[in-house]
Image 1 (cartoon, rainbow, N blue to C red):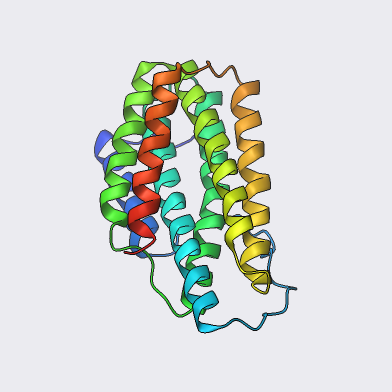
Image 2 (cartoon, rainbow, N blue to C red):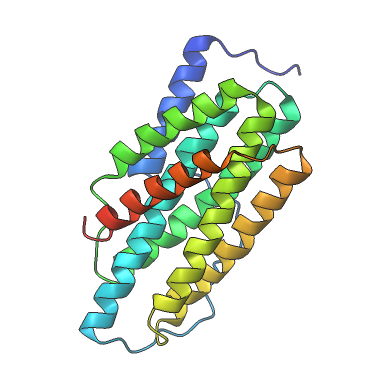
Length: 214
């Protein structure tokens, strides 16, 4: 059986479905074991529970942004192998998205109310990066993942020691994000200019500072 040829309308509807699943539904996961499945729940004070929830909410929004970014880049990728790299990373980010959402709920809190806004912004950035060319798109992916790894390292320092479940999730996320960065570099990622890297860092700070509270 030959592969189906999708019309532009099909593409629009599929991407709209992806957005809805990311923001409000349950996007498809890879089927990997949950990193905290065998981890016992630690005893947290009210203050520790609230802090963990806020940090995991930030991580959840980061995964929402990642999905939008990869979606935008895959839409404009010129090379099929590059598109597959984006789609593989997006599939693992879906795991992260689900793990973070579950953890935020278990900690008695909610995901960020600002997620639709951040999704739209990240989708726009992803499309723009893809239009610039595959090497630049991969460079943006690699730098994003490097910054995410540093961000997760900071969260591991801030998460309460007793919150073993959140820590197990973040540890696995850190491993995956590092692998995504390495895959992008191996695929030919360009080195981004310093001003762009600085702008990415500043944008990340805006996201983390707002979603911590909202």
